[in-house]
Image (cartoon, rainbow, N blue to C red; front, side):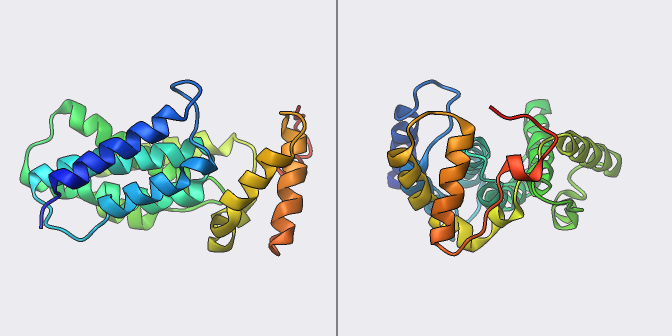
Length: 218
């Protein structure tokens, strides 16, 4: 079964809903958009024949999902879609030739996938390397791996509990409670409320301020 026109139209509609909620074009989606992102993912990952047309529709959809979750600082979610995205790229490369723009997109996808996988803890990404091996030169794979890991190394530390299924299952409810409870729009209040509401779900979460004592936050 190929991707249907009805499914494509629904993806376009979901995209419009999510983008319509943003205050500006570069804004991240919020907890309010999670149901629409989940429905988009369900369509993109449905079992179907992967012909050229279908893959060319699935790839930008999965790319949009990874981009959205990365902007939401939810690497625990984005990593779920980078793997099928890379797989879709390698499948499409077997069906038609990739031009320079296609290859740039593929390499960028691998780079960001590695970066997301190293967001919380070091990860050698051997499974991602296995997917792209044969589609990218070994030397280029090593370059992208090194660059992504070095880029991530300088960032602040974040609590690895954020990539657990327990955390991901409740974070939208927590974000909604924070939205209703916060008095001011600054990070320390947000983190205090987040820790409080997550603890109500039995999750001990440490803020970036706790994990990065030498860094000043405001």
